[in-house]
Image (cartoon, rainbow, N blue to C red):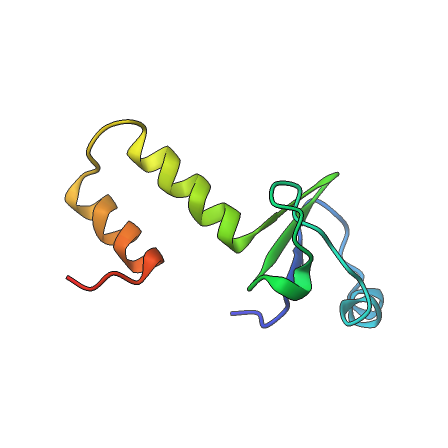
Length: 85
């Protein structure tokens, strides 16, 4: 698994340029507006960014969708949020 904090989607890969920008570039989450220096990971897409924390919140919302999740979905949610069974 990659150790990069900012993962770019939907763009041509220029690894030399990415390595040069990786340490200097501040990228902000389009949802919570935190910079990549304050989150675990950031996914950068065309015109939008989302941090790992906002992604987990979105996944939890989509799985729950106002009803009880299946046992498998609940295990995934528990793993995300660090709950022990």
